Amino acid sequence: MTVGELADAFCDNIGQVFFLDTWYAAPILLAGLLAASRKAAAAAVCGSAVATLAACALGLPAERISEGRYGYNAVLVALALGATFLPVTAWTVGYAVLAVVFSVPLTVAWSASVEPSGGSALTWPFVVTTWVFLAAAPALNRMTGAAAHTAPCPTPAKPPP
Image (cartoon, rainbow, N blue to C red; front, side, top):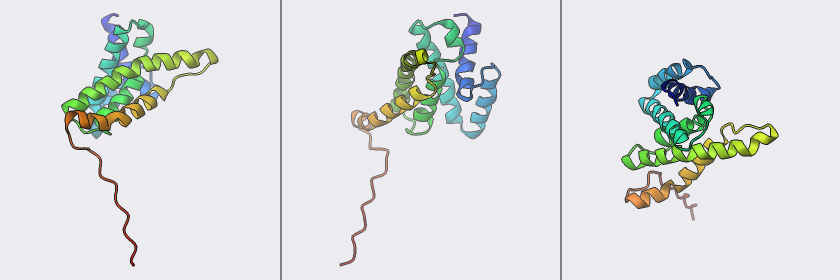
């Protein structure tokens, strides 16, 4: 891929979250994310960069990579796991990066399964990836020896005798 195609891929990964396929949509969206949350903006930037690298490493078509077809789900996964649902630690950042990488081939597979019937992957790869990685997150706590990051379930009050 050329430098221009890589730049297009980086921007379109972010812009495609809102179905915007112009290069200038990404800086505008990133400015909005930055105004709302530096953590969210950083997650979107990292998610787009990692997704682009993963798509290139998988040997996917440069034209589709630069259109953002393989990266918008990854940006959403990065926002969900890296900036919303999990606390930011070295382990969870690595875990979110792993989920972003996982979302790229899942997007390819999902697209390949629905395109013959005229469908589109839309955000199903994001949803499935996020669910799977959130379901496995408690195991991450056990592996790292960290305390669970969720509040305990409240116990129901005992009725008066």
